[in-house]
Length: 387
Ligand code: GLA
Image (cartoon, rainbow, N blue to C red; front, side, top):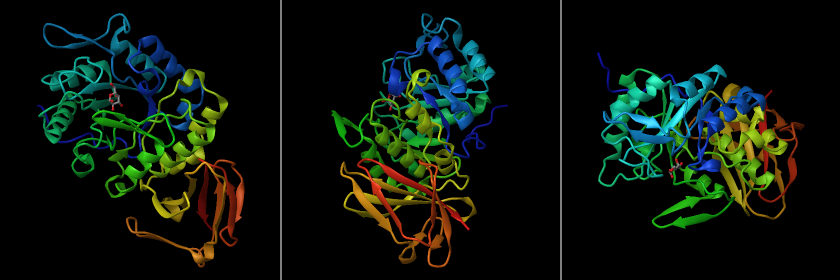
């Protein structure tokens, strides 16, 4: 008997963490590389830090056979997807795959249009754990209907899969996708830059700061099991180290899915330290699942807060400019109130100890004014531990 009408609802109670091929490798994917990535997830400590999904993005596809079943490209995936899934699972990791609502993917490979149930069954038989479902070549298709169809197809195939809606925010998925998928992209693709926007008529790619501004207004829609997705990480792909740190910190302040997009087989120590910083990841993975909010903004310096379990808070001071800024925060004069969680921090009444999450030093308590020199494009990120 088939059951329709729901998503697998025990998944993604905290934002999904993993790796995806697209940002670094584009269409150049093959089974050897995916196996090596799975090995590197373990040997680099990424798995220990919480990264679980190894996701193959676009272009793994070969052709459909005469019955319509999809097969991976035989030259690049000669052992087949089932063997690859078995390998990834043997490392204690999960395997993700990519398809598209339209007849063709963004990379011109076969999409799932008209084959949704057949593809979902195929993926389940292969042992796939995560499906990213894209939105190219969809003129005239209703987004809610299309994504709901694939959700139902996955559910009836019977294997739990995280369902990642990659519709770029065009049809405002935050308004309808809570019960359809586990995460939904809120913008077009991320661009490898701190603060830029690149036109690809008729769409844009967005730098880190632009995505932050788009995500900020959507925090009411995100939570355990249903996350706003500001796109995959560009950490380790070419920005300056402080810019990577800022990018990662803000994604964690947003409770964003943390899908690394670099070549983790060959990463610098600085990149590894950013991606595997457990204290910063704990901000992202906090079980309450609230996104942070902007508390203040002045002269390119923004102060963000995120409510955490046990009455703790995360605080991130972000310097968007290239100039060094002297920042100060006199706790006793500040009251932080979050309208969404109804959480309240009156620093003249409650004292918090301060942990600097990047230097890993104690920064005293909220009884003394906080003062710091903040370099350009950098952050000061603190955990406020209620005493
Ligand atoms: C779209 C998606 C990207 C990536 C590519 C693959 O642009 O938004 O994340 O999956 O397609 O072609």
